[in-house]
Length: 516
Image 1: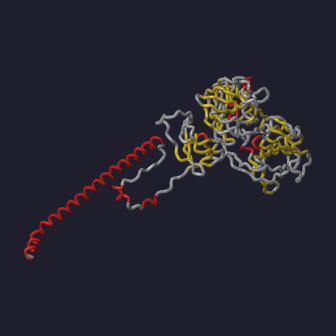
Image 2: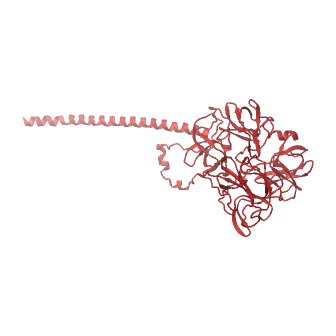
Image 3: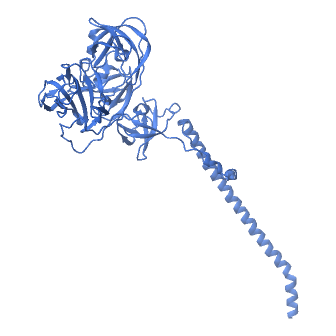
């Protein structure tokens, strides 16, 4: 019986093995099909992801051609980059920095109509430029600003800003202190100078032939005997004086970072050469002065933008945040006018609320004109002050380090050399807060006769070494009103005005704050 069972088992073994082998083959085949299905789905997902990145890269390329963006590497080609020794040869891409020219809220997209902001930047902030977007291929949002830049702030926040609000050099700024220091008798040798300098490079754009009536656009303009900075002076002109231009020089000169030709001018009492950059077109002598008044400002009036760039702010103040910018000849309508007249950079006017297309904001009225062809360069109203001498002068000592009587010192202002008795005027609207009568002349006599005027926004100006003082403590002054006369009192070696600007009691270089 056992033998029979054994024989039957032996006979069934091949059939059992066949059945077992068949089951193994089915499992293997099922596993293979499953792997292929997984691989197929993985390849499809990978293809979709790569396509999305490729589409995104194309959109970025169209929007911002300067931005380099690499899509993820296809894993199938990974063997081609296994040897990565050449990577060490690549240098880090150079970063470009700039400084903010005025307060601004960075936008999330480069369009004036976008009201989503990422952060705020202030005048003088240092930022990194990331790219310049190309807006020509995308008309999704309306905008009046043509050129934008994507920037990154010091804390890593990114956003868009108009390119005309960035400078390659830091503008004159100071940090506000928590308290003011009332140290009026601080000697000239003590200083904490903020010596950053910004030069604006412009170019003469006048006509070269035929006589022409023009006006002076700076506080004091020297008239020279020849078209050269080395030539002697035969007199001076004041702001808004009208002259007849007879001819222009064939050559250009550079002065204070400005490139311009010389103009030979004639008035009723003087003939000579002046730096042509400081002349502006006018049609008549009467028209020359009207532009600096406020009679052309009225609600509902339609006026034209004079500067090549006019920054429109969210408040009627030079510290207001810029919301957008306008260009020369842009047509605006006046919605509202502030009641108070103020002086900025020697210009007396009122702040006005204007409308351009669908955009609204505040501008200084002196930059608007009835004349569509009126023109001037820039609207940097951060330069609040005018030159405090109304007649001929020259800068005999600059701000910062100098050698005086054989000793090194820090000069806390600038010295304007002029004949004793020359009128000294207030450099901006303000109130006299301190004055000293001391007509002595000695090494320990400090500023001699001097006056301190307090202005808005934490600024003060100091007028030292005066012969006479024409104001009283507490007196309110307008820009251009007489303060005293040039003298030689105090620690002085000749007739000159020592002129300081203190911003929150920090000494700053007046040349960064005076309009040319």
